[in-house]
Length: 228
Image 1 (cartoon, helix red, strand yellow):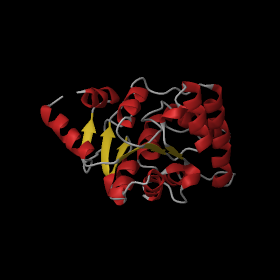
Image 2 (tube, rainbow, N blue to C red):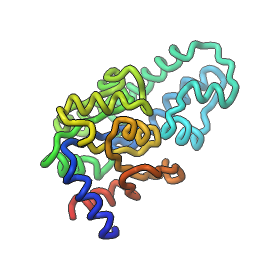
Image 3 (tube, one colour):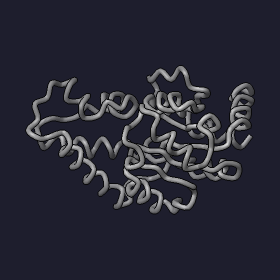
Image 4 (cartoon, rainbow, N blue to C red):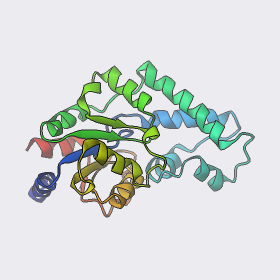
């Protein structure tokens, strides 16, 4: 990793007073299970989700059910709100059963940052699902605040959940760093006036994250810099 990346990271951390993490796909290997849950429900009504399209349109851009219906001109015999509720039930089953694991580097990254900053999760998943995953990993104690879907009326790319997280941490928004892996999260952080660090993974390699303050090739690379 280039020295300039280390210097930029240290400068960014030095001017910050709180860290806000996304959760799905960043700390937890949960995105495949969101896909499985949505696909299981859509298949009941005669439509299968394309996995590659899902990673871009749903996970990174945040287009969701409405985007899927528009792209494929679907005529589903169910209200989208009820379809989403069915997905929540399927996904929660994965969370409770311990199927979803944290990425190997996640806990160490959080523990390192927690020595100097209050840390929060700001996620589009329900808090009880996040809590179940953390509890199964023995990591529920690591976060000062956990904000889930119920913590904001508007979802990313709207900045509301990040602004609420800053308030919960009692940090000015301009002093918060957001750690993200999705385009909608980058957009939300910038709309909130926050710095944003993007972590690349196998699902977001082709996403344009120009506008991020820092981009790391992986969690491992980010951890390596934090330990330097």
